[in-house]
Image (spheres, rainbow over the protein chains, first blue to last red):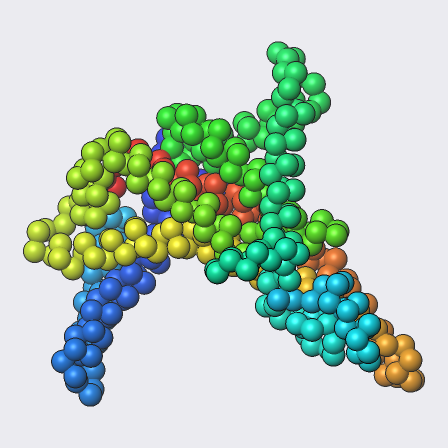
Length: 72
Length: 287
């Protein structure tokens, strides 16, 4: 909170922890949710698309964090 | 609905042998629960989905009057060489500009300084209502108030983004991450959407609400423990232990009251800082 870069009047890059966390949670929620919905719609007893969706969402979120905050 | 003086007095008049404050009927002991945050309305109009005029409403009005009064009395005869009240007001404005607005928006943020100053003082006043004796209920511990404030910042964020970059430009900048190949975009755009358009305003509101809620609950538990554990007539060692626990709870109550004051200021600061980051990001466009 203190000694933020950019306190001299220039906007800093928004690499704050909240955005990173919300990317991770958002990825899991969106694609995990889509997988869960697919399982529910297709009537699978054991979840098939749920783990696929969770992994896809996690990978997407990490990719997003890397491109937005690590490589920039 | 939580009990207050009225319900406890009514319960005692009703022949209740053991009137207490922490449950719905003012009778029989119960530890403090979340019913603390649903005060019994003073005036109930019976409209659906409304709470009537409660302690929250009254404290909200008081907060508004305090903020208006502060600015009226400190700036009504503004001079080049400021007096005492005007110095305090100017220090506050400069503090908000340098610590919250400029880190988020740069020099262009000065146009939004009046909004941010108002927001900071309003939220701080609503928070501090939690430790004013007699009031002792932070207005922001009801999710409705932070939610409306966060919603207004969210709308402003969209409006400014659309005004600065056009409708398509704003949503493209917020939804399509730069530097990602096209084939991966179907995976990323929903994540960006849920993260920027859903989670962010929600966390913006919940962060303020949850800290105030938890802090008030903590103070209520310590105060209740200090009161109910005080039982010197328990006999011998038990009386000593009970008075000792009661003293510890009261010391904890004082310590956490001071800590709450710090948290109240910090949360108002964080809310305004995040608001300025969001609006600064809308001005700046693609991230």
